[in-house]
Length: 280
Image (cartoon, rainbow, N blue to C red; front, side, top):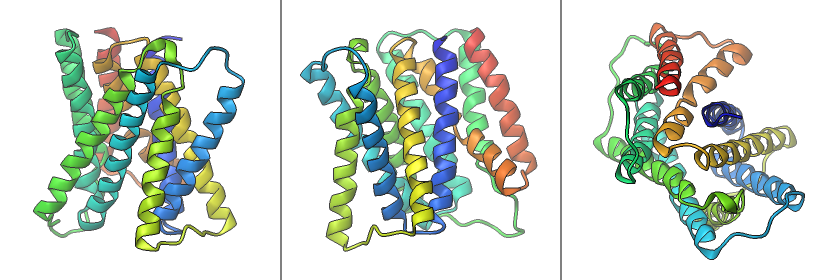
């Protein structure tokens, strides 16, 4: 399977995981949903690894995985904090754009070269991310606290570093770097829950939704790792960063949410950007 196609499948899985995570957090507390979903993804990965051939990776690859877990866990924690004090229509696309720019910059620094077509594709992809995050107008001005913007930027940087760190693991390591990545993030959120005294109990139906979201998130991680082990970081990460489009599309299909003109334009931009990035 071509690496760009794997990256697009990863983007869809990330978007679907966010969609289920959003459903769960509307019915239970956020910390409980995060811990359950992360733990479910870890359990799924450990079962899958039992049936995969090959030997465990080198310590260097596991270290990159642990670093990815720290960055990704910190990025998620900051994202939820930013969403708590700022509008999703600004926080979410700002975070996603930063998460896309960091791997592109890292890829260029590592010697990757972008053709003019791919440069145009990257620019259009960033525009698509911003547009799909725009909510339908409610007739009022949206105020954003400066600290909310700073936290959103920091979240995007950390999520971008998560993508870069996973990409630094050797292709021969397979899915093994995801083990320390997920163990680190689960431990981080469990420690936060214990320190703040937050409960992780939730109704059984919500538990199933959260676990499903965690499984999809782990699938997305595995697909991203497979894509970036076979293709250039700057291209794979940009394609994966189009995941908000699938979240919006699923909300339209299953929840009947109406899309704004900006969101429809963003989805169209994502389609054109994909063609440019793959063909360039």
